[in-house]
Amino acid sequence: MARDYNAEARNHPDHRYAYEFDYLMHEYMLRTLSPFFVEGNALELGCFEGHFSHLLAQRFASVEVVEASADCIPVASEKVKRSVKFHHSTFEKFEPTRRYDNIFLIHTLEHLDHPVEVLRRIAGWLSEGGRLFVAAPNARAGSRQIAVKMGLIDHPAAVTAAEAAHGHRVTYSIDTLCADLRAAKLRLVTEGGVFFKGLANFQIDAALRADIISKEYLDGCFELGRVYPDLCSSVYAICERDILK
Image 1 (tube, rainbow, N blue to C red):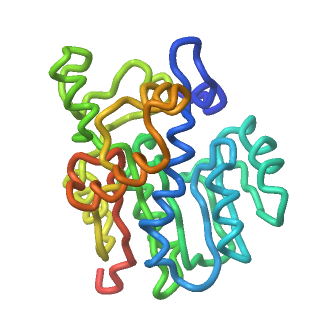
Image 2 (image 1 turned 180 degrees about the vertical axis):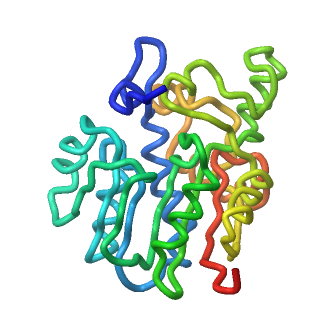
Image 3 (image 1 turned 180 degrees about the horizontal axis):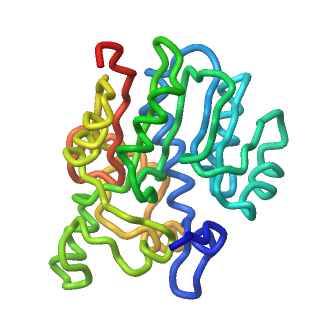
């Protein structure tokens, strides 16, 4: 069945595609990943409305984006307001004309029907010494494990109805994420978690609006996530092409 990428990116009355917490997470994600950046250009795979694209454009002189939703591209382009090249394509059909030093697949891998096959394609787009940065929502996040104990979801790796409506196909943990990357013949540089998380995204948004929690609290959760990666909001891995395979 053909997918409607525009519909998957839309908000619904009872659940959003992205919450304010998701945008706050971008800064923590960059704080975690940036020590591993390679000098050169960047390719972002999947941009939604361009918040992460904007942050990448501040760090790299040359940024390209591949996005399957035609509705998202003009919104992202307006947000970036600088020279970022957008490609309207799926990853399965995209044909790059050059190689990339830094490729970002941030909260996108879980949307793919055939993640290992796509990862193998992406590996071929990396320059010599280039790196792929992958992050995904964590099945074992504290908030999801609490939801299981509350009876809201059957098991931590379940794909909820709301997630399925937004195109999710799988919910990764650190071990399953790394397994897919290895199956794609990518060499792991490092992996871990970002931001210790005990509340759902909408709960964090509400707590921030009510001044129940502060930016300092969020910073504390980020630092605690370095100690407990398995309970973090997101899991990540940084990879290079395995030239021996």
